[in-house]
Image: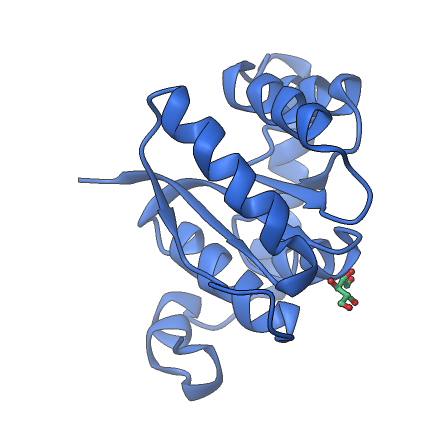
Length: 166
Ligand code: RB5
């Protein structure tokens, strides 16, 4: 059965990730923490990949990624097929990223956001539905780009590639 939320951070997002885990538990939401597990320096691509690879393969529905600014994680996440990662630093953007963009990965900046704001952004993002309608055709265009550019069988590549195997 498809799991719901995967969450990960680098050291710059570690503290905020730990706080958001309390929030997710309190909200009764199932999640899997894919690291990092301390504030020792790590490389954000290694942890971003863990989450988006699983979503790309259909093993999780949604992801939350946190680095210091949210920039690095966004860059990594949006390289992957089927990933619509949106960096949100306010509640309005969080709502629109779901309503218009059907965001499936929320990216946050651990060194930018206070904990309460991050919780409110997450709550909004988790509870807002995609509006569909005219926005569906726009997302279809993004899918078309993916399909045109990604000629290889990415599922096989994701499963087998050593650099992406974590
Ligand atoms: C780590 O120092 C920092 O560069 C990282 O957390 C992130 O902000 C990168 O975009």
